[in-house]
Length: 489
Image 1 (cartoon, rainbow, N blue to C red):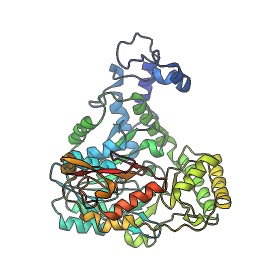
Image 2 (image 1 turned 90 degrees about the vertical axis):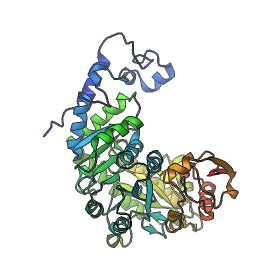
Image 3 (image 1 turned 120 degrees about the vertical axis):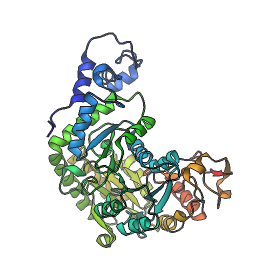
Image 4 (image 1 turned 45 degrees about the vertical axis):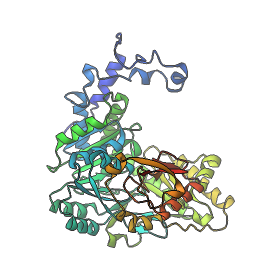
């Protein structure tokens, strides 16, 4: 057992920040002396004194032998891994590295169609061929859930030469599939199970939270420590266990994807967040769960509102748990779209959600929230229901259903081939039945509606226009106004 009280990287950074010396190395601001006054006024000088480069005492992220290595070993033990890598380019680079480390050009990888755009980037970078699975879909709420063990088993029977299976656990809405069963099926083919666990870094620290991916049998998992725990934005971790993944390939992939000038502020925040959770995680998560339960109970009692629970028939479909710190509120009963409710809550009541969709608002309740936050949230929804209610809204959007029954089978070439193909830009109305050459997704959550290599359909175009008309934001594509799209020529 390692001493989880230690913070080797944080301590080394603190010591170097306080050491009097003449700096003749990057960064150019020289511990804050060259920072503009407005930025200093906002952040203070201490943060810039600690904004250091790879000095001798601070180790090297790509060949760690000192304090970074020690900090990563402590993190591996705390999160239940055999080896852990610190990520300064977010979980995005971790998901990309996972694909690069397990798949090459032409190799098949099985994954759900509702993956994050980082997985599509991994396909483009690696040249892997996606075998997309249809996640289970709730047509009433228009929410795509997880893939099932049966779907994975069927895919592997049809594609026994696949090199890996990748899944999302939990989904952005907090739904957790039967990862243990998926891992067991995957391992029967002696291939690794990769998990995008970006929103599940807290699972390891309380028994009332869903089972952590590693405990469930994942070979690799990527966690956004900054999303739900106490690290700075962009700070994430990649963990592995077992012998199905070559750790050297992970290291080499991360060298391709991460900055050669990593921020030690981000690295130190990972060290500190790990110590915090290792020592106080259960207490912090107990308090978080209590706050989330209070919010869930009180909001569910407001007329016109409902909160997401376990999917109907969840157990029979292989859904085992809901992350209770994730709160999705359906607002369409108020005659409002999620986008309208989001804008009202933000501007009128200073309550800001994680993301909005046509019918819902999704909120993250974490260790950083307070009872005052919950009270403000509940009061905001209470007033919203009383003062802004309109005639019931009918949202007829079956994008996910259309996407997962048709679009999955409309991949004409690999994402890499389409991304690098000769392309042209066409008016949106002329792109139907063309092959898409870019990633197009409402953001957040960053789940692509179109990706390079897919055939553009009218239903998808209609959905994107509907999202935009209702106040959603389209990202990933060259023209975010959605007047044009890039297609394979």
